[in-house]
Image (cartoon, rainbow, N blue to C red):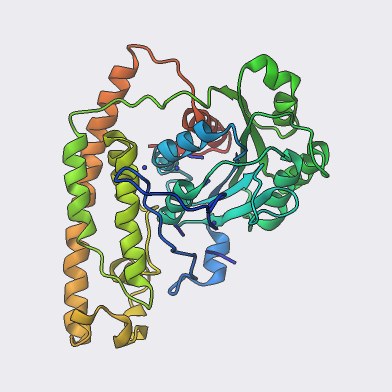
Length: 398
């Protein structure tokens, strides 16, 4: 998390499923919200020939979840929506690419892990809410970090694009020596490059250790970037005068969604749950998520009537009455079409308002950033390299 969805707001880096440690614990008001939403097929997809011709940016995030990596997981949760917002600025020949994120965890000790201490948390998906949900479910526990094996798994298991214009990136973050496990990174990385997948490494610790433990060598072999971060450092946020207004817009935005399908209401609940998770990190993170939800990348065609009919005008005729919310089951097709049109107009207006506020917000952040902040974290590392790869590929950033 063969096409799938959610749910760095997002290294940016859900990088779909279950936590690495499912032991029960008492919940507090500040605990992350955890639901049981799983990936469902997108009901009203474009046909496969259209999908295969789309330009894609695909990012697989491989996170070390061994016992010392709590800070890394916190950074991933904190930077998801910021990463997403970086991705949404990119265009190829004036068109918005399809953006997919996948998540793997490795280094775990859990009954849910395979013999190589890893698992796919999500396949490549557009479901941002699901990515967010799964990041907040991650727990750390373990000590065996097989970098070569998880790179090999991601290369073989994920549905990578085949267009020359596609950007295909793996980001692996962790802190132990890179050469462990049954598959050497010296074998796994060339296999990734055969598919034009570039491998980036993010070492959690000081640079000398990262070089000694082969993280730089792996990045060089993978034609990617090598980064060093302090995984225990708290993400630095710049709060702006626009955050509260963007948050209020987000609440109005949620009211424009109309669920359908047997599990539509569950997905809609998860949308609210991931709002709460973002808010539990910081006010700034909540605003970042709201900005992500105003972009084309945030598409919920598989459970929302407005997005569904935007992509396929004839799709409404295929929805059974019993798959609609109870208060809409008695409405005629004409009445439903009118309601959907009204919600779409309202949503477009709110998204435009958020987009304008987001520009002012970013200008404020850019100005404050000049005052000096040399901190590096998972999100900063991923964002920098994504923009560098995009430039090399001929993409432009809005």
